[in-house]
Image 1 (cartoon, rainbow, N blue to C red):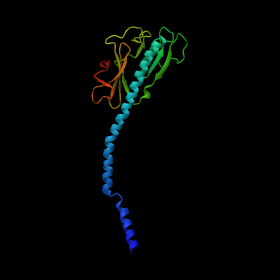
Image 2: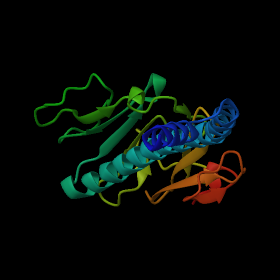
Image 3: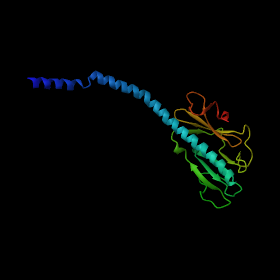
Image 4: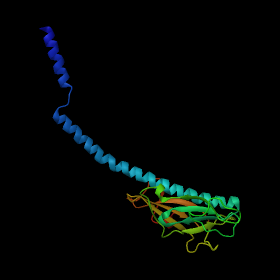
Length: 207
């Protein structure tokens, strides 16, 4: 008799540890709410990292091109091509340079040498607005200042700005000043803002 009661007690305890249908439905509902909140935030974080990576890569390459022009005493060229892929070249002892993704990586003295090309496909879901940018320019080897290909100074404010946008509408400006200084800023509009950067209305306000 006692052993029978013990078995009954164990069976009741086993069944009491399981989920009831109502408890299961409540758990599923809570998980659905958590996912509904978490997924958009996660997507936003992913897109933010993508646009930051793209902006930092371009700004670093612009700084590199400027520094290399001074170091080598040869003009460095920056060319933005269709689809916003870009190339950096140096004159390699030549009087001028036509820089693009087809320029040879290895070149003899007195010709144009391509240092590298970056493809826009390296940063998926990121688009670029080049309306306020200069698609072809060079850095002066004496002072590192940006110049037109004919060696003239940049006109107007002397600043050029490239705007990057993520698929969620976040925006970063990559701005080059007349001195050759490069800075990354973000759009001050709340829906376009990327937190860690200086917030401005337009790329021209970045410097």
